[in-house]
Image (cartoon, rainbow, N blue to C red):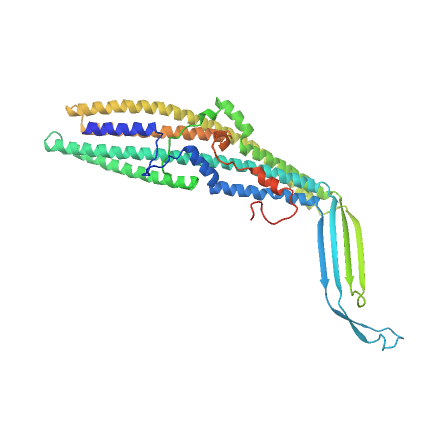
Length: 470
């Protein structure tokens, strides 16, 4: 019976590894969820990612706001009121004019147009700064997409691995229960001592504790899966590494990362934005030229039913002479911020290089761990079988059998973890070089177009509705 249970445990492990540590819930007829399918769900529905997309859309509006500096401003004014006038002219009879209160109802309409002609480069550099800020936000969105896809792949593989570990722990409990039953039978016939029974009971209690811990870990992984991907796991298909999308060696990976990682590109665009900020501030020290035109009509301004129409146009030149030194300080401050942004790019490059090398090392370690764990499982299976046979003839104790059983269980769990680590590490390397995207993986999902909203709002002169109708 013990041999049958042991064989069953080995079969369960091999099947679990063969199907990619598949997580299966009682759901007859359901189509298996694939890793790419889960990534597609996270790509479209993850709230953190969608919030970052909304942030980018809000950032897009900075460009039309800056472009408003090129456009005229038009202001209309209307007024209406009532007043009385007591007009007395000396030497003129009071019957005609003197001492009479005459009500007036003055009204006016006016419109004024102001157009900037020369702003010292302020509008131009403000537009360029806004455009660089948009580019920064796009790269930040791309970085968030990578983080979301990696989190989703990790959550997916955690559920698979934790399910396989729980299955192994449950099988281990079954084996230990059978071992305890056999030990008690042998104790009843005097083949073993009470110590052997106690050792089997202790091993079973430990097995139950390990099973409970594995179940708790799985529940936590399922909750994380729900948080990242958007729904509960039902039937999960095998996970596959993405090593085919990786460069051939770590040096090539570093070169790719330094040229394509979104964190580095976002930093470079941030430097551009800071440089345009310097030029924008400097424009305040240059002359400003604008034109103002106006048209107005007044009614009852002096006498009843009189009308006055006036039109004007004027050019205004403003030459700053001294503004207390505030602008000079702001320019110096902005230049220091440019230097800080450049140094931050160097810091980001070093961080990216470290992440690539570290994640590549983790991938290599996972590959080697898989080979070692497979060898360990095979050796421990043989060792357990031998210890069981030797125990039958009295050459091994019950404790030896229990230790061999625990060693085999540990090697099986280690193999499961190593296979999970290899897949997760491959995604981590792909993200560390800046290429983890639905496009690179070939996932069939409608990709978010970051340029569409920008093009829809860039040249809008008016309108309160967003492009999606809000």
